[in-house]
Length: 448
Figure (tube, rainbow, N blue to C red):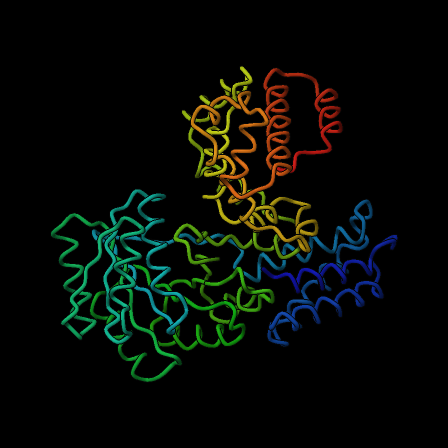
């Protein structure tokens, strides 16, 4: 996400390394590089120039005031503030009023509307305590109704569909009536898309909007289409005056032009971002956090939030007791891995940790490591998983055959598991950090 932009911005800041203070000359050099970086990220030149002019004015205004701050750090701070402002400044949540609240989803075909409908329903159910009903109003695309049905089942929410009805306005109205009669407090209306903006599409989405009077209208757009995404958003907004934007496929967008400029161009906030096909791969959009990620500073707040979503207080207390008794076993380890996997893919998670962006950039990190470890543990008997000390050479050979690994890999995994268990036990007993550091040095660092 935004890797190219991040690299070019870092290059711009390097111009200030070793400089004693900000001057008109070194500010001008950095501004030139920042503008090039933005244009390379598919940001409209006019917007890029206006943005960098603001940075230049702020930098010149503070160059003689904050003399204790290094020039590079000061420029990063200014750019981060301006990026945050460019992307909307404040976090905008979804507004759902009425009973049921009505959310209308619009966008082009292939933008990810149906998948997002499922994600939003899951979010509203699990994070907001609502009872959602999704309504299938795409009467054109083959299998659209089936796709929404599958997504709704995965999200654990209700779905309203009328396969024989070809009038999307009627379907939406009937769905809302059904929701009222059956205790659903929010409906999400999934509409049809086209391959491009056309008069018929705009007329239909406007008719649906007028027919159901939604309390929230969200425009879903593929961020990888760059400025085309911004232009499409502008066209839709002129027709239906939507309330917010949803950027999908952000995990594949290395440029970032749409995320940076859609708020500036359309005047409507980005409310959600989507980064994959799984229903939990969606986040509320926070401009300040995104600015930090663009600048390679991580996003520790989102990381912690994802961890908290998977946190089970009762389970944590049980694990803590086992660690203190040095009884942490392979079953416990499997459970902890399952919680980590629910947070998302490892490389994306690590990039949220400050300082890890550069370390992980060229590393081939994926979730296959989990599969390897799981196959080893699942090849153990229940007794072996609960009592790691039972694993003698004969048992290890049997496990190796069972999971298709060699004996060296089995020995390495068990050794690392034992080192990790000792390390956690040491920390739980409150041993000083000097001893802990020594243990880490002796281990050479865990590589599970």
